[in-house]
Image (cartoon, rainbow over all chains, first blue to last red):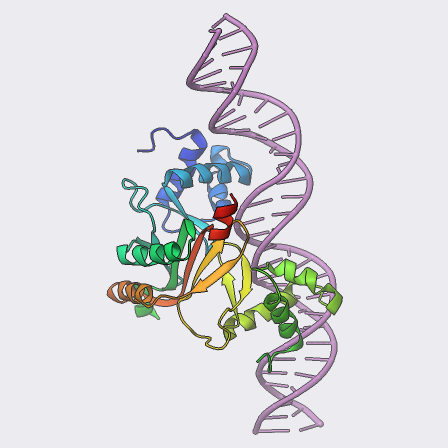
Length: 131
Length: 131
DNA sequence: CAATTGATGTAATGTCATAACATATAATGC
DNA sequence: GCATTATATGTTATGACATTACATCAATTG
């Protein structure tokens, strides 16, 4: 699975996979100090590749990164995220109807979509119960 | 319209309204140096209020801000943005079906949505033609 | 007119991300 | 093999975005 990754890519991937929720690049860096990583760029370069491969997602509203929840079917196209502001957990889902509607808007407006971000911030059931 | 805004809020609002596209907080600051603004916080505080009032939107994928395109019907709930990477222009639209689908997901997953971000990055028709 | 509330000003700091340059390692073609 | 190219790595410095902490000022209210 993490077969043809380089050393740094592997380190970053494992860190994200083992995390409870999204991590910032600098948090990843901190967790990899003992493995020899010293500069932000080492993490960002690994993240860039992992993003390209679809193994990792970037959460724009958090400036943070998560391991893809469906690592086998990368290239799902149009993934939405529900991000709990209480516990930080992230749910990943996709919806064909939403995709269809946004594609439709783009087509009718001659807009060539390259990447679409859908992020819902709020509170998950567990956190609503506790509050 | 910009009636009950404070001095700084008014300055920031006018800057965004007069801009071609989204502006970063620091760009806004630069454009308001002559009006006496000196620190980022002055801009961020004004932006916070304008965001609350629905007069301004934050584009998460750009870390930038735009004046609302429909300033009279604030509180549209669930606005989507198409952001052209070529010319920087932003189109604002909403889609009830998308809203319905995302609301449906949230309800069925006991997720209490507070704010939803939808941003499509790509190239607008004009920019596709030119390239 | 004291007390509260909200806006403002300023400095310092924190957080996220990339540019520029040097070096190393691996794969390819001759 | 060996030069060539491409990719990965390491390091320093810097740029870009955002907030904390503290002081002051003005308007409102009881």
